[in-house]
Length: 375
Image (cartoon, rainbow, N blue to C red; front, side, top):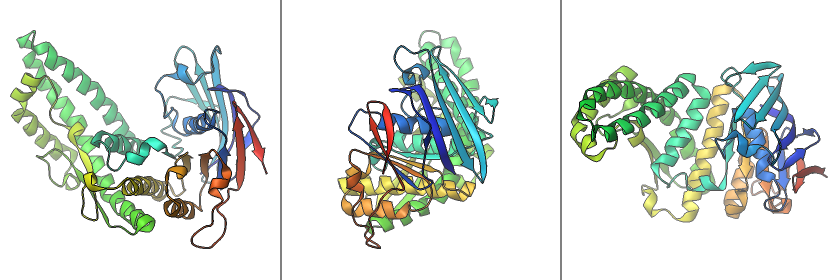
């Protein structure tokens, strides 16, 4: 998959760019801080995923005092060119057209992109919620049923949380709680089912990339709520039964605390490095695991779609030591990549495998919302 070109109008700090034609390989986006490098990656991500990775509000991405923003792009996927037009309006509305036809979602056009930003450097040892969000992002891009179940889960979870608090004022509402438990268990069973299968496949890829980056040994395991062991071997209906049993046992505790105490929000994707938990990792080891997870995500999407997804590296290579930076650059020699940095020279270090300089096929400089190609 390849982003052939993009043109931005009133997107963030870009007023009206010329059409940018990108390299099929590595594109280096350089410039000082707060000039618009991340904004460009955000526009690429918006084109691929139909949303921002920085905000849920459409108004946030529209240039100040402008009524709307536009992203016009051409994408090549499986040898076919597609036009993408995204219009973002002040009333928090967005319209997406692929090949001239308006799309409610991008389900029929899964333009895959993998984003790696500085916040992701704690992905391996951060809170479990970080890894659940990562699972949700990757699986939703591939499985529409998962995305639907995730939306249903969020809606039911919020409703049940409110109901638990309302019950304190009106005890008759307890009768409604059982209905919410059933609906929430059904949605959560789908999430747990897909998460378990995904983690079983991606864990070896993370281990391979960790060994490549640092030579260390990694193991990873998906862990659902305590009442469910080996969820990858169970059907969603079987998981649902176990969730309902768990919820029944926690009924009094939930009523007392006013919180939902079981379900898909209690899951984790646990990782050990050299048989040590994340609390014992160094900063460098934590970054190794995070990089390995993102590279594994890229390889997984390649296996699923037959093409490498677009890789977006937002100012993360400068946070890695020389060995890990070289290893990443060696690993991404195929597929299209966008790398932001303050100085392109920091990427022109010697490649540890073949002694050649790791240089991009295309180089761009961003300054105050204006972008130009450099030689």
